Image (cartoon, rainbow, N blue to C red; front, side):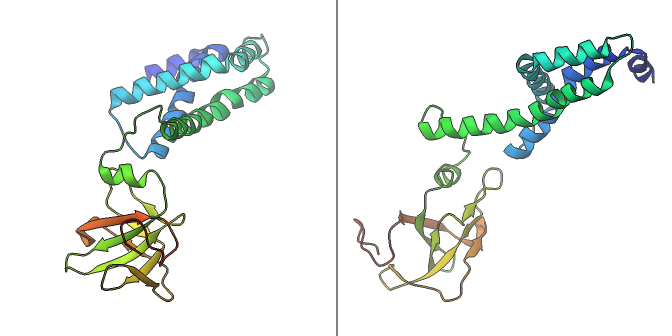
Length: 213
């Protein structure tokens, strides 16, 4: 209760300084973890909150200064303060995790950064390259499929699950014979298959350098 009393005793511009230090970072952290789908320790969270808030303050120092000025007046102008607070407490904190994710993807594709994939499964499917897949099942049978723009694969810590948008029958030689009629693909979990076989994306029926159609 003493902490709440101390906050209530703060003047508007002093309370604004506390908000700027923690609230933007907290919002950015929540969005960042939602995008990355991972959690961290309490110590890491505190560091991230402060780091995001400092970045936000460095870039948006002018709206922060204006809001502080309006709130420090003998008769605080809350209307103008709130307008500037929107950029500081909403627009900025939401933008940073999205910007970081876009920059990270661009850097990974350009080869400037090493990926953070936890397994070969993650590394392969993170490229997003279309390909033909042969799924080898535990009973010794196999089924073909196409991994394209409408397909997807899970990543760490749930790697191993993937969706193929098309299923194809295989001939005796293991070639892709024809698409299964009316099929909308299939979802495979890690325990559903033994291993996967991949081939370059090309029209079905066309021979590739491995002799696989």
